[in-house]
Amino acid sequence: MVTSALKNSVLNLIKSFNFIIVLYISVISAVTIKKIGNSGAALMFLKKVNALPPVPGKMLLVAVSFFILLILLMYIHDRYEITHQWHMVIAEFVCTVLVIAALQVNYNGVILLFAAHMMNYFEGSGKRLLLLIFGSAFFLIFDYNVCSNIFNIISFETYTEYYMGTVATLLILVKNLFTTLNIILFIVYTILLLREQMDEKDKINSLNEQLQAANRELENYAAESEKLAQTRERNRLAREIHDTLGHTLTGIIAGIDAASAVADVSPDMLKQYLSIVSDVARQGMTDVRRSVNELRPDALEQGDLLSAVNKMIYQMSATAKARITLDNRAGKLSFGEDEEEIIYRIIQESITNAIRHGKADTVMITITREYNVLTVAIRDNGIGAKNIEPGFGITHMKERLDLLGGEIQIDGSEGFSIIAKIPLRWGVEND
Image 1: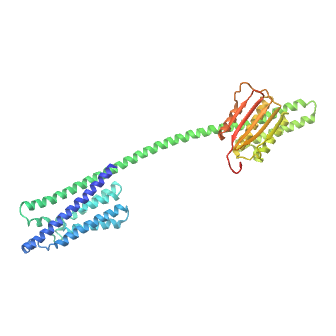
Image 2 (image 1 turned 135 degrees about the vertical axis):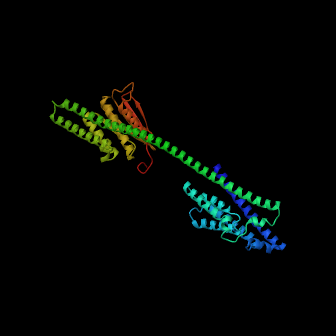
Image 3 (image 1 turned 90 degrees about the horizontal axis):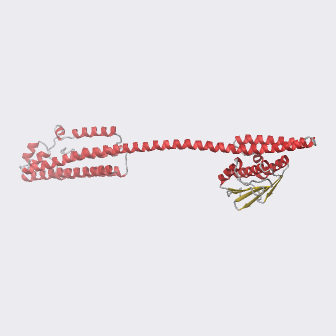
């Protein structure tokens, strides 16, 4: 940033120095020509130079006018960032040549100004080197000693010979001093331009390193995310398999126990229990397949939530010889798929635990709703538990509820009760 500002300041100095030199040479030349004419030494001067000098006022006007036009073109070029229009480059070069011609090639440093300005629009070391080569070539071509062999022109030194001694020397010294300073400023400008280019490369390299570091962090994050996703998926499948197989096996065990109890007494009842066990096993197999395929329970796929819960209650009541009731005070149970699945799994897990672990023969399910919070309460008359240690099923119930921002309350003092509060999303289904 500092280098760029300093570079622009040096370029403005080059413009100012060139204007001073152009003005200086054209004024001295014009004044000298006028003095020679007024002194009556014109004939002697013409014989000496063997060429017609320019009209004094015209020389000054043309040189300064074309230089001002050149600066104006450069301003337009910079102001509107015209980077790829070659007509602007050609126009600036033509003005440069016309300034040199108006001064009768007594000053060619304007070429350096043109080259310095153009280097802003040639990116890359190769292009800038090529521009420097062309600029140096034109700088040598528009040299007075070269052009005087082709054109009849008068040197600035010849004009200064009109003045005697110290004045003539001082006039030439001032011109050479400004010319030298112009060259030095051009060299400084070129160095600053190269430095700016190096700074840009360093900045790009730094950004590339940062980008590579960010890519490495992103790759590490992606790897960690993949591991986390795999862990979540394993937990999800574990929950699904636990819910499905646990529920199914509980029903099968209860059905077989019931069948064993009536095997010697009533063959018809035995067949009835075995038929129910068979249906529960088939339903469990279907649920397992669908869980592996990341689908919802088959009962939810085939119907609504209330129908799925009633079907589950009927099957468990029949196989376990338990009295399972549902009191739905929430009205229509139509929610999002993830919400319905969690509600279904909580009821399923609670019934399974009540029969398997609590040895309950009565399970009461109550569903209520207040605004966008659905409360599912499952109570049984089983043996309960004084010290509740969450097992796989309860842990997964909590995990499921955490996904929706819900909460669960467990009490094992009188029988066993589970109260789950599930915040529901507002929407078309839940209105």
